[in-house]
Image (tube, rainbow, N blue to C red; front, side):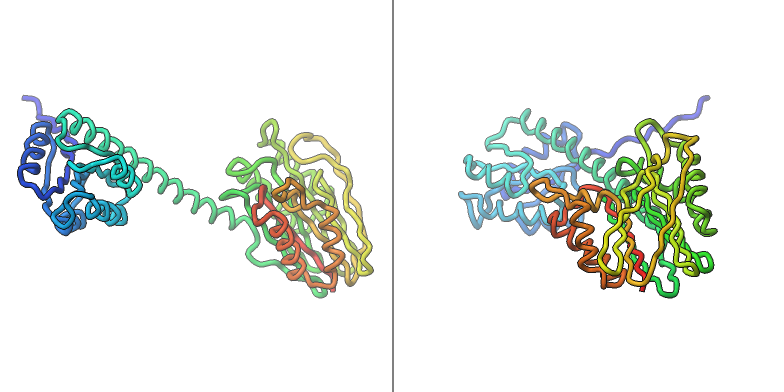
Length: 386
């Protein structure tokens, strides 16, 4: 004899009917029972609220008129607001013999899902309930999916933040401030600062695109460049090494702009390489502005590119500002960029500030320009010589 196979059945939908007329309750109970629904009854607003607080229902059939207010539906309308505050996903089908278009509109505004006029048509009642139960289930599925996605995004955001340095190393006579603002949950901008003895390695990068694809490519960049920075490796060799890694994993249309420098506090020199990144701004102590670029290609497109490096003197009072285009190209309501020229003037104007103060001044100015609406990932790194 073959073993019996038990098949789990979906629970019968549960309908809560609220009306102060027992003949109406009984008629609806018999109708719904014949179609396989479970029903529970409430004859007053307080009874309805008590049932909702203690049970789980798929839909509510709610009369708008009660003994305190038998014609306008005002008591029932107030009840809708109370139910919505308790569970805004619960379908509410309102029923009244005193219905009018104004009452129906007000009921919908307060959260009613549908409206049935008394005396009702049985087929209309059943179709309405079936439709609202399907809507309830779909809404619950969507909210469950949204909650799972939000949980995953929270985890992803946390992992993303761990790719950035938690504390910035310092050298005697050197101040550093840095931060990034993602346009989405995660972004494609990257920065890092590492100390190796008397040398300080700093980099900034911008992955083409936004969101998760850019963040994944940025994670590959971070894994490759961080060990090199901990050794304060030469800029040319670092750019070539990172370029090879990015070329191995990138796809058509994706690339990374990258600026990397090593500050030698003993010699007072900065050695740098620029792989297609926005030229950093160097403001001297006397307010003179210089731009830093070597004209080399972005990372991820040319695996055999020969990267070069250059050097400059970094003296007391100098300010080196590295940034992504999310800072310089941040637009106002009129579509006007913040602009690199405006950024350079701002740095020169506030060149006597320390790194943290200068960083705050710039980011506040960009936020004021755009009304707080950053359209792209925005990253800013400040190195200041005291």
